[in-house]
Image (cartoon, rainbow, N blue to C red; front, side, top):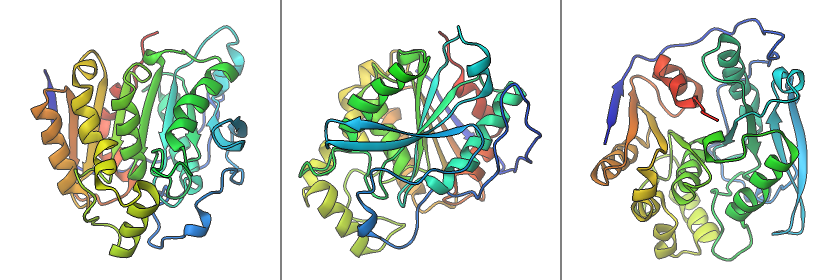
Length: 316
């Protein structure tokens, strides 16, 4: 067993000029959703608008689970076109609540710069549409089969559409906030699909959804009702706490796991507790606490520093 606890100073990374062998992406704002207002009218926008980011494609696939098209974005680095005989790993990057479109540009820039610098392998980055408040879980009433759409439909679609390394060693699931919760859920429930799991400022990462430090009681109640059918047993059943215990033995067999949280993040307490949970289960993982960073994805990733990049190493 190994656990690395990192406490590092937050820092910023200046944009670099794009390498023509990778492709350049524009810098956007350091945000990936997480608005203060709960907007239920946006809950079922299965096909979003396209974002205008270099080398990012807006695509759709037909979902049998809901009987309609579902959109996603994908960053396709230039070597993918220049090396037609090569296969590439995939990062599935799950957005936070409120929708992921604002975060596609800055997250793409983050990965593009790392590929240009040779810090990480050249890889595809897939941005699934998790709806503003889809929670990356199958809703109890069946109205939003989010897990089914991503796991049973999107992942096979990506492997059929692109030249991927189509096994667990070639797949990484990562996310911020609601997306970090989703990454934990998918990675811990399906260790045969994902070789690495990264949770950034993840939430809700508590055993029971009786409170939420970043939203008011009305929104917590709305999420609890819409997603989990006001059934705390169902919330526990699908939570990373239970999934980690159920699949602890499989997760110990080579799954790379990372948990990172800002010292000033309102969800810090729950991330700290979940780190303790993984430690008690003897599940190897890296744990980083970044000083002077709140609930913000890029400052969090930048604050992890050079230790961030080794996580993305993929062996074919």
